[in-house]
Length: 339
Image (cartoon, rainbow, N blue to C red; front, side):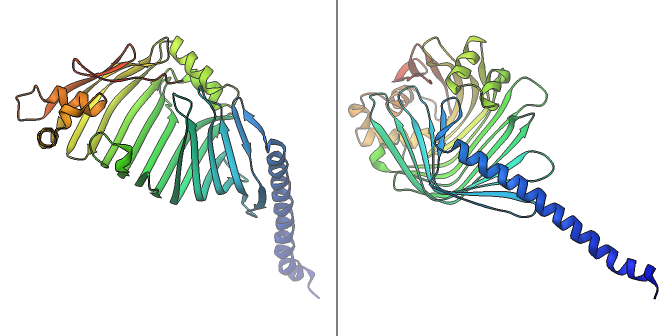
């Protein structure tokens, strides 16, 4: 008998079995550690001011992922006026067992957001997503990038074909790059949207600096309000590289800069170029909206546009100062503290 031939026959099979057993053991250790960590944080704070709880969990994902499926997820974030709460019927978190620290998050079923208004009243927003997915990338135990994608959010209050949010630590400067996009948003008429119920497009491209003001939040060691105050006292600002909105008949484009004052209210200005305003103004005049307007963004806009004789695109400054939002020199609305 030629034993060398037998070795070449059974050797690879044995090696594969050893590798498989090692992989199973490694996955079991990673899955067990993740399961114990979830049990430990259930009902407790995972970071200052952020508490998480869930009703049931299931672990899966062998061999290259650790998947945590949670039912009845509830995330509570401490706010200035009261807690901000997000609940999801079903939630899943996927993490690789190798390479870089990256997580893919998914939510399904009815999603509910609740928060408190200025008067203390509780507001609720419920929606059913066609797809709700996010990814988080960490470096040195600190969040370095977060991407959120929401497709077909169905709700009687505010629906949208798509909503995206992208946040990352800028690799070149001390800043956070922020991009927010939304398509085909419909607002219920009873919510009295300023320029009609339909926002065809919205896009914001901005940079927040200094980004290091938020290191404590990104690493899970600081309350977000303390980070905001650190940002403000360090003369922090948000540079709006571009903003574009297609709202009803209006086509709005602009840029500017923002910060916050000592009372945490927005301060700054956006330089806007507004097209399609003439038909909207004529409609407001025909329906007597100008006479009945008692304040707000739409009333301020109509008051400003009513003095314009130009038939081309309108150039306007949307200003934020001393707790008042103005369009040009026309006060439009009061501003609430950001935190």
